[in-house]
Each structure stands twice: as C-alpha cells, then as structure tokens.
Image (cartoon, rainbow, N blue to C red; front, side):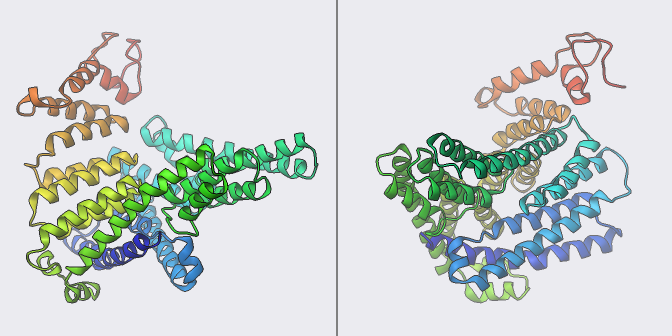
Length: 468
C-alpha cells in the first residue's frame, strides 16, 4: 500500500514551502519592533521546525526505488532538526533570569535531548536530560528526563549483556543453548524499542525470525516489526510495515499473530485507500497557479487556493483524512491535516474551530501537554464561542495537572465549573472533586493541598510548607 504515502508527500511539500517564508518574516518583524525575540517566540519557532521535520517520513520503498529522493528528504529533515537545535540552544544560553526563563530553558534542553535521542546520539541526549533535571528535578519534565536517563542507561547495559549471551549460546547446538540464544535476541530487540531505536529493534526482530523461524517468538517478533513500521516509523509500504504483516499472515497461518495481522491489514487498507482518495479530491480542486505562487514565496490568501463552490467538500475531505490518520495512530499527519484546514479554510468557522480543538487534543493524546495547552489557547483566541470551548477548558486543566502546574490547574478547573449551565457540563462532578481535593489543608498550616503540591512540600506535616 504505497498510494497514501505518495500523496501525503505532495501535501507536506506544500506545507513545508508555505512555512519557509512565513517564519523568517515573523522573526524580522519582531526583531525590528522590539529589538529582540521573546523566548516564547523562539521556542515556538524551534517547535515548528521539529513539527516540519516529523512530517518528513521516509519509507523503505522510497529508499529502494528512488534513493536520491529519499536522501534529499533525509537531508531536509536533518537540516530542520539542526535549525531547531540552534533555536533551542539560544534559549538554553539566555542570560534572562526568573521562573519563566527557567521554564523555557528546561523545555529547550528537553527538546534538544529528544532530537539527539531520535538521531541515536544517546550521550548527547543524556547530557541535556541531565540539564533538565538540574533546573527542576521534581517537576514534570524533570521527572520525565530522569526516567528517560534511567531507561537509556539500563537498556544500554541490557543490550550489551544479552548480545554477549546470544553470541555465546548461538554457537552451541543444543536445545537449551538455542533457547537461551533466542530469548537473548528477543530481549535485545525489546531493549532497542525501549530507548527509541526502532530501526535497530526491527533488525534484531528480523534476525530472530531468520535464525529461529520455527520458534514461538518468530511470529510475535515479525508482528512487532509490522507494528514498529506502522505506528512508530509510519511506513505502510510493501518493504516496510505492510510487507511485514503480510508475511505474518502468510508464513504463520493459524497463529494468534496471523489473525491479528489479517484484521489489521483489512482495516488499514480501507483507511489508507480512503485517505488517498480524499487527498486526490483536494488536489483536484486546488488552484495550481495559486499553489505555484505560494511555493515561489508569494503571499496567497485561502480564498485563492481552492475552487469556488468546493470548499465545503474540501473541509470534509480534510476532516476525513485527519480521522483516517488518527485511526492509523499517525498523529503528526492528522495534526498536519487539521492545521491545513484551520489555516486554509478560515471561512468555515465551525470547521476551523473543530480543527483547532483537534490539534490540541492530538498533542494531549501524544503526551505533549505543553503544546496541547498552547493549542487550546489558540482555540480560545481564534474561536472563543466554539462549541468545543467547554471541553477545551477542562482538558487544558487536565494538561496543567499532568505537567504538575497545580496552581494553574486549580484555576482552570474552577473556571470550568463557573461556565454557563453547569448542570450540562460533562465533567462537572470530576472537576468539583478535584477542586475539593486541591483545597484541602490536612496539616492546617494555612496552605491548601494544591499549593503544597506546587511547592513539593507535604500536606501531612505542618512544619513542611511552602515558602511565603
């Protein structure tokens, strides 16, 4: 199944070209007006570089059939990541002081660490994770960074030990030694998954299948290869995830994994076909001249991009595409579709508001809580009367609680409860219970529970309390 992959490259090319001239223009204006770029703008620009890089998904079929194009895309992705690291580094090196500056520094270090981790530069990733912990060890990012450091170190050691076991035991032709060898090889693959090196995980799962094709772990390993291609590398090609699932169904007929693979292939075929058809429909009604002008760097309004009388149809196409990518658990592509809708079809206010809400929701589902909060803020700004407003207020409060900003979470849960017609609010009771818990003062030291949480002190000990 290569059609949807090919079509999405066309849409991403348009998206990429549009952003190339927009971001520098914003920076020039800000620098001219105020003499320097605020940290909030710097981190947003760096975040956008990462988003653009994540949209460049190079599949195995492209590498086989057009290596030149594949290398061009990989180079473009690397340049975007390099530019993002430069942007984040400017934030980490800022001389500004205060809680806000520290928050931006911590976020920047964390993002740099994630980029290094993606690029398999684990020592560099560990360096920046350590900086995150130094800034605020008990906060949300500090806790995540500490966990990531532990995971990397533990699984690096696991890989070394299990590879040593595999090499020693695979040479001994006895059932006991072969069983130890296959288990060791499987653990190596699992450890690579844990540290986010999905290509190496795939290599070791496939090595297991090749060397121990009759072992019960072989169909499980091949099924996991398909899962990694589909849901981590977003590769649906015959040389990637599609081919892996086909092999499971064909080579291991009658197993649990074969049944699961057949079901998944059937559903995925429907989703990818529908996505490709909707993308083709949008291309059909897109003004090619206007798109060429945009690629040339000229400002083109949304009214010029699509044929008159077809915009409602295109809105539906974008919504269908996003829904399809969500079913495929491809959140970057789904966010891309919603962002295109929100920015290119501003005349349909209901659809624009829905797209803005969905962008925030997708960031939240992906664990990107800070970006989800910013996404919901964008909804409040662009569509304050949206039918999604109440839901967004509650979900934003949930995000603040998730990143351990309890004072802000308390404020937002309270704001949710104060909305019009509280009896119709979906999460009113949940919000009420959370606010009641936040406002407890069990040690009677004058500080409510949420303030104790924010400061990292105990609500059970009156001598352990936040500094006034």
